Length: 88
Image (tube, rainbow, N blue to C red; front, side, top):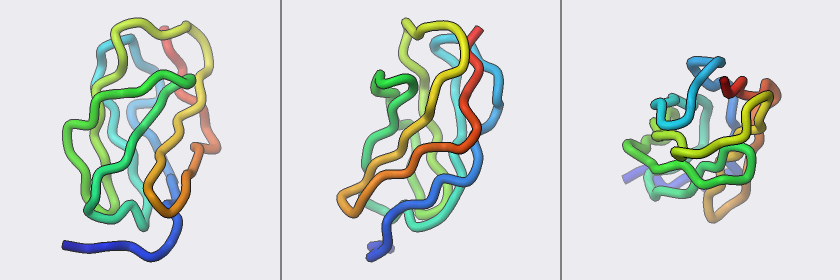
């Protein structure tokens, strides 16, 4: 297992336009192999897969429409995407 000693760095979120319940992939570095959490607009998403450089989540069933921040948290810190997710 890869255990990162650095805070995570979230670099991109795809797709950039989504609906509640969709799957989204976050890419970056230093996520580590131990699962953390992902939230969209402050609501926790369900983690489907987690690696040191990519995380796939299912969005919550109810989200506020509009531009929402994406935050990934591990035991060593958190990272919020510079580009928000557009929820339709």
